[in-house]
Length: 350
Image 1 (cartoon, rainbow, N blue to C red):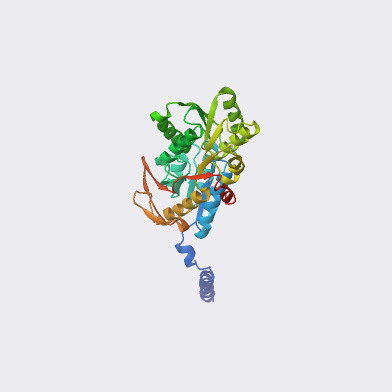
Image 2: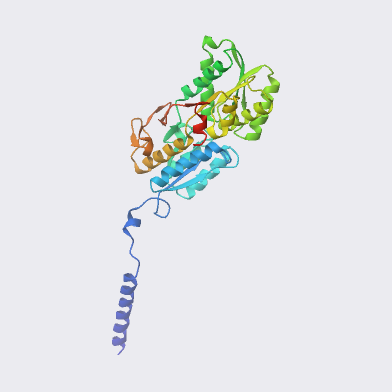
């Protein structure tokens, strides 16, 4: 009898194990073969802009989101309250913990972000910069709006024409660490070395930190410190709008000329009034859109960030990775001139 009960118990245990095994949910083929995202779902692509409250940045993130959603991924849009490297580092750490597939960053500092971005790349996250570059060791490729030399030189050419080739000029930049701003300013200085600009003097480079109130204050300080100032170049959308307001409020139209890089929607009133005869920019939506497609190509392995890599960037067509100092970059296109003849059309676009 004891032997009989022992045999029955063994049979019961065997059946129980078999039932348990057969009722386990089978692993789906999709989940088994996917590496996208922390949960094996959509690929997740993050963009970190310099700071909140910046219309240019909002348009850039919009373009990035459009590209990622067009590609079937999930876009994560982030920006700190203040344009500091420390705030961006915290966001990078959070994204590493979330195991995103790619991080695109508009750097607040070219070098300070390196440890965090290197950590992200070591974790298998594809890292690229756009607009304001981080150093070559901190990213796989950079998305450039236009040739930095052309951007810098064309702004000097513009202000020179506006002031008749003679007088004092100043630059109202973003932050002192912004790589894009600093590169453009270096090319402005190189352009000024041409003998044809011998009667133009660059008296100061001021920094408004891409904050409207500070940019207003810096513009007012320039006007007070240099009463003979003839022109201001503001290669920042926040700065040029702030300077336009100050010159308008003080009735200085025609007395102090203003040019630089601005959003058509924000600068239309100043171009139409003549405070800013003309300015330049590219489409920030396209910058973000190109970054989204480049991030996707990096994640898919279509490109690695090496010179000669090619990929299709949606409606922007074929793009190629080219040399950029110690690193590589993907160029969007040439700067575009906005003046009274076309601002009415473009102010409705962005």
